[in-house]
Length: 460
Ligand SMILES: Cc1cc2nc3c(=O)[nH]c(=O)nc-3n(C[C@H](O)[C@H](O)[C@H](O)COP(=O)(O)OP(=O)(O)OC[C@H]3O[C@@H](n4cnc5c(N)ncnc54)[C@H](O)[C@@H]3O)c2cc1C
Image (cartoon, rainbow, N blue to C red; front, side, top):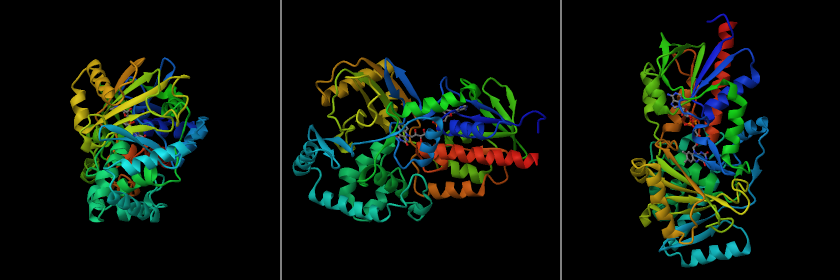
């Protein structure tokens, strides 16, 4: 242990790493905190960017009102969150047209929904009945399907995928007509890639629970990230990738950066994705390695565009393109109703999202190549879309933690036992809790508290 202030190194300045840093800095002034970030900006998958008065989100786009830990942190940072006035609404592409679907809403929106339900052939009567049946099933477990505390849904976290679970319950039509679209929208993955419990919580939280709303800053997710970065800014070192976290006889000793510098520390928090943690901590015990190896991520490519005109009606937050339509695009989001100050007055901010294999195809192109391809696709569905005022490409080879069946339970067991046999090393990241921005923040708070307790116990 060094004779000066105990030093904590946090690897990664995403939501988890920043939440860890902020929690320590807020409560403890006797620690030296350094956050090492590999990229040239902080924020990771919640980062935002300001472009000509537009507040662009680069990754995550919405916060749910049930994200209590994240909202407590936002309150302490002084970031105001607004609950959405609108209930959920969006458009689904089918038979060459975009069809509006709203949960409640104005008379006009209700009429639009009625027209969709009556004429939208791919939502069959059987599919509607199964959706209703599934809603009732989820409602019965609604209190347990929580992103804040998922401990009561672990009995649903079998090895089964969401697709298998739904099919086993005779809900195949629901899955093909609506479920697949919702999972794609909220995880950038497919129903066969996510576990049953995680899938049910996603669907209940974001879609089928009619009472739930989003709660986020009026300038969007990036405003939260920006406040968190600002609060920790004097402690963050950008463009400093960590190559290895050094463990000696099970005790964290520090890190080696990519330029070969060893930095000593009294404790290290690894707040990267699970994949990176496996790479930079080669000495992890085999039990922990095997748990982390189960964590998988979806891939997506997101193109943000500033427009002079709104291409979706007010209250419609996204146009969704089901996999079976063969469309290249997965989602086109426009959060004007949820984050009204994301775009300057009279303008609108749109994000086009492509997932999975199609995203990986795009990753091989230049930014200009990706933008051209996306704009061509957009014109097929929005022929009146004006030329974008600007566009930006964001590549996410690891987008949303997909949580295959049984992973929540396995991670929970690992978390509760602590990293047994290891001292001074703490893991944070969305995969350590219920994967989401809230889970990432929770994992950072957990790591900070455990880290402070560890150092205090050594000083006692
Ligand atoms: C397109 C997209 C949309 C999403 N939408 C939503 C949404 O609407 N709502 C929601 O709740 N969640 C959403 N998510 C998921 C959410 O963004 C993540 O769950 C959360 O931000 C993860 O935070 P994290 O800190 O765990 O990881 P990250 O944000 O990935 O942070 C890890 C950090 O570590 C850094 N790093 C990696 N390797 C090294 C290294 N060797 N040395 C130093 N630094 C390193 C990275 O650069 C990064 O900054 C979305 C994600 C994406 C990509």
